[in-house]
Image (cartoon, rainbow, N blue to C red; front, side, top):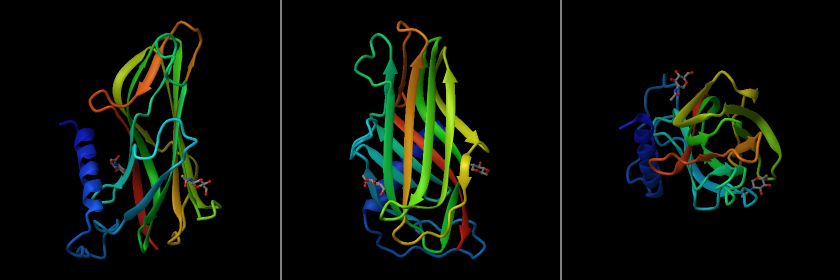
Amino acid sequence: MPPFFSLLLFVLCAGIATAIPAANPVAVPAASATRPPTGAATISKVAVDTEGSGCRSGTVAVAFAPDNSALTLILDGFHAGIGPGYEDFGTRAFCRVNVTMSSPGWAFDVQSVDFRSYVNIQKGVEVSLVSRWKWIDTKGVDMKGKGNVKKVLTGPFEDDYLLHKDDELSDSEQSVCSKVSAMFQLSLSATLSATSPTVTGKVDGDSADARFGEILNLSWRRC
Ligand SMILES: *[C@@H]1O[C@H](CO)[C@@H](O)[C@H](O)[C@H]1NC(C)=O
Ligand SMILES: *[C@@H]1O[C@H](CO)[C@@H](O)[C@H](O)[C@H]1NC(C)=O
């Protein structure tokens, strides 16, 4: 099984697991750990913005990896298209979520980002994938900690791909140890442009399971 699918299953299972209250308290590991122990970083709420054309409530799953090395966003029905045959698709898909999470005693920063998607664009079409994240308080006021990543693909290109972006985070600011009320706001957009009205292109979920994935690789520190 390709690593992404394992991760996806992993994440989906983790999502199911977190929905069931844990019967036993999680063991606390050695003090030398560089990440919170399994179960110590939790997500209590994922609120999906209605202005986003690329996602609706119930189509978005956000989860920490069991070892807390990553935060994964999985979208059902996130797609965009351009040109003949894609009239029903928008040329831009946008999704924004507010994630209420808790990791007492720990703070993270985003180290790198992977996108998992299916892209099929002809010559003359360009796709831009942009993801931004920041911390906000309950009133929507920005707190410390933000960043963004952008990837542009130029046609012709067709692949299911896992796109890794490392050391290319822009506008990056280290987070502070967040208050209980803080939310992590994560947005993702896919925008297509074409040099001619006859060329086509689309960005879609992975061809195997139709899901679009974004994996944020996290670095943690103690507060
Ligand atoms: C997410 O937070 C922002 C800032 O507070 C707010 O404007 C927006 O309505 C929130 N979205 C949801 C779905 O809660
Ligand atoms: C996360 O980032 C670390 C440090 O840059 C790297 O060693 C690790 O391989 C990355 N993991 C993933 C899943 O990208």
